[in-house]
Length: 342
Image 1 (cartoon, rainbow, N blue to C red):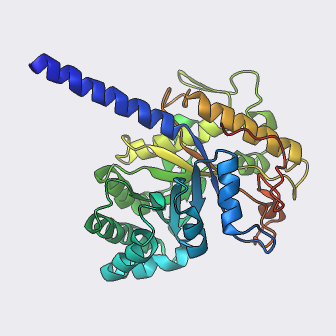
Image 2 (cartoon, rainbow, N blue to C red; image 1 turned 180 degrees about the horizontal axis):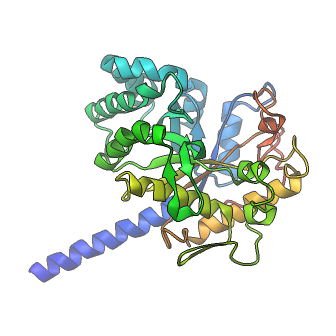
């Protein structure tokens, strides 16, 4: 009987592992709203379905988007916008109301997967001290709503928190970021939640074009570019991702999984690096790499869940001119280049 139980348990374990790996290898797309010429929310959801895009990230719980997602079964990352973090941190009842209004009122018709408490908040920002307590209050609210087995709480960070990123095995957080990240990492470990990380080889390349070759950033290098002990890196995406894994290991987060919550390449605004050809090359090679299931040198064979930024160009996006040109599709819903998600 004992041996049969062991075999039965093993069978369930392997089945669940297989399902997780297939699911996590899929690619999602972020949906930004900073444009005055974008299609309606329902048209956008239809575009996701038409192109077999089964994952979406939105940057605030916008009711028209959430209503359009009802019944679609598209897995969703929904952000707590940066300006809303402090109230949720200082008042547990505000977190409960946020969950009731933005999650329970739509669930299970909307397939929430992650709640990202803030996007790219740095330790020096005034709201950084509120990230962790907001995560705790939201976790309590999600648990009280009976949704903690389905929805994970996290935050979306980025490479600016790293003090060392090269070589990847030496990856570590900045000294001030260690204090900021430690309680967050401990929270994620306790709740078996992933860390969300925005990874942009484009910005690494334009920041140091001599030492970060374009082919390395575009997955076009014919061989190993960076040898790091026994690990060889042929593309910058893997190196950046593994630098974050190394940083997590040094702070007690070695068991954590990273979800790449943003990555992309602009098609205009800063030639020659930002071009339609380079954007199409990066996106198509990235999708192929993620879906291969190869993982990274530090996490070989471990599935990578990755969200592309973004579904459309956003003509009202502030910042550098390139910020307006990260879209995979034009607002007319015409693809900028050949994209295959399936």
